[in-house]
Amino acid sequence: MTIIRHRGTAIVDTPNGILVASGRKKIFLLPGGGTERKKKESRRKAAIRELREETGLRAYYSKYLFAYDEQKYYPDGRKRKIVNLHKVFLIKANGHARPRGEVKHIAYYKDGNINLPYNTKRIVERYLEMKQKKSPFEFFKKILKI
Image (tube, rainbow, N blue to C red; front, side, top):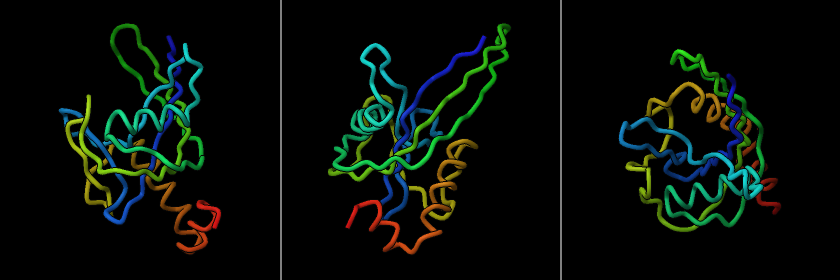
């Protein structure tokens, strides 16, 4: 059995680092979540909604960066395969991030200071590679359309 989930994933890059959040288990992930299929929600809207639900931040700008697909297998007797199809967005937001809902901890990833799960780390590394390929001014000039 294969379950396919469409997810919007937010990268909020701040001077303190990239925003990550965790639940009770302190496994830090990028904000985001699955789309509300019945409402035909886009992955961009899912990323923005989940960011608000999880941290209280209000997005004022979002830019699509890239897609990332991950696969997980759960050996629960049924051998379910979960495929997460991420669309990753750079999001600029107002407010002060605070844990809300299922999120219990907020942190900022910078220079490997937090041990991230494999797929989260791959997404962050890909973003950082994109950012580094351009000078910071050129990167944000394109993102913010200056």
